Image 1 (tube, rainbow, N blue to C red):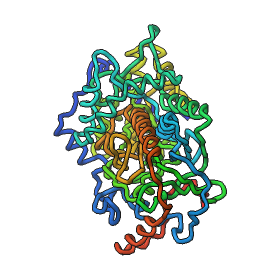
Image 2 (spheres, rainbow, N blue to C red; image 1 turned 45 degrees about the vertical axis):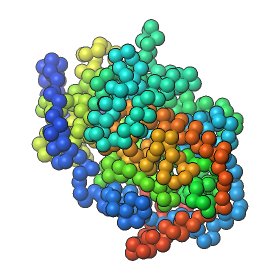
Image 3 (cartoon, rainbow, N blue to C red; image 1 turned 180 degrees about the vertical axis):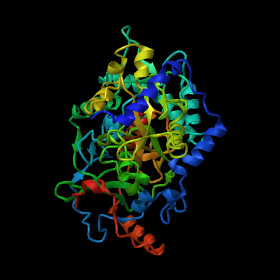
Image 4 (cartoon, rainbow, N blue to C red; image 1 turned 60 degrees about the vertical axis):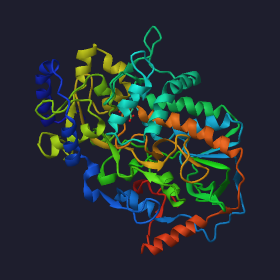
Amino acid sequence: MSYTAEMRESIKKVEATRPRRMEETHRRLTLEEQQDLLRRFHPDYLREGMRELRVGPNAGDRTPNEFADLLEARSRVDPRTFDLSRVDYDTDVLVIGGGGAGASAALLAQEQGVRVLLATKLRFGDANTMMAQGGIQAADRPEDSPAIHYLDVIGGGHFTNIPELVEALVMDAPEVIRWLESLGCMFDKLPDGTMVEAHGGGTSRKRMHSARDYTGAEIMRTLRDEVRSRPDIQVLEFAPAIELVLDDKGQAAGAILMNLETGDRLLVRAKTVVLATGGSGRLHYQGFPTTNHYGATGDGVVIAYRAGARLAFMDTMQYHPTGAAYPEQILGLLVTEKVRGLGAQVVNVDGEQFVYPLETRDVEAAAFIRECKERGKGVITPTGQPGVWLDSPMIEWLKGPGTVEKALPAMVRQFKRFGIDIAKEPMLVYPTLHYQNGGVLLQTDGSTTVPNLFAAGEISGGVHGRNRLMGNSLLEITVFGRRAGRAAALKAKEVKPGRLTLEHVLAWERQLAEAGLNPQIVSPLLLPEYTRHVR
Ligand code: MEZ
């Protein structure tokens, strides 16, 4: 397929300015300029994109319309007729979610000697973890420290993050890297055995550990293999949770799962529950494409909210600046930030740099949108999609021939299928929905505001504040997955379970009615509309 004639004309300009640009870096924006850019161009600030919740613990808070509709929908379960006396599975810790956070939680829970059941909507490993590319942050070099990492995270989140959660994140990070290595994770290393570490947007030190540009896949492979090798962790695939079950003391006490093939309901009784169902990119806020896997429909947040869990930062989503804008077949797929970390600049239709390449993601994305929408300096594809150039051939000039193939094999293949050689030609990119900054409010041990309900990973809110830095999601899933798994297991040893009940679902129906709502849709969504075949 390759590029059209018009795009090739623009690429000539990119090539013409490259020698000059090699000598110059775009200046960084001041704080005032960043704030102005965000207010005017970041999708979070579009008023019509969000609405206030009318029921539940966060009534009055704003969240994207699509998420609000699901949070305020009806249950898939009829609480009047569901038979809670017929228990299909009995366990100590129920982990819901088969990505990196769920796997980490299951491992640490099992190490406490309790029974663990991990239930997941699709296959074990079908998760955003698998699709994370560029790396995982950890301050483990002499010139770095968790304190510096902390400052970067807080700065990246525009000083809105919950400080204790950030402290937990950065303090556990070096240990998490050692743990992953001990389980067999193969990080990139120099010939002398030291880790290759790079910059990401908003980092003041090189601390991004990677496995080429399939870091998430390598971490997920490692964690999944480890779970599979421990026979006392039971794994149930194609069994999404559709409702939490509480007991008559108001404690989380299990969940109702759905057999995705038959539609049958399965009741799991548990002493504690860890929710690790990931994000919600497949809700396509404001019509954005997404980097997320098909199951990212916000299910865990929905069922936690109905059970009374408080949410935080639900009005902020992350739009990754570099989603593929061309060819259309890969629209919205991730082009890793590592490309910019390796030195590639971002340029407009005339081949001019218009933003520092490693501003924090929200600022970078807003700058791309301004360049295309306000300044008219984007490149327009045959389907009308705007984009800007990510000048990947610069990496070969800066770091030597062959670097692109060596450091970015997944990217090379993603574009080669369409006749584009990213070592020689730039990639066309535009912001894509990547990550849910907010979610279920956590304590540092992963506990939530519902007794015996824990959460970890992208489902949670608070650690990143209003903007997450690259490489802190693979870190978050492992740090908080481990913490939640351990805490849930310890709690399970002392829990005195009560009688199972779905009273909270009845109470939810009453709240909807009192607010004058009569929603016709049911939630959780489970899969996006365009894959709809579930009962
Ligand atoms: O943390 C991320 O979101 C990540 C590593 C993405 C990327 O650009 O590669």
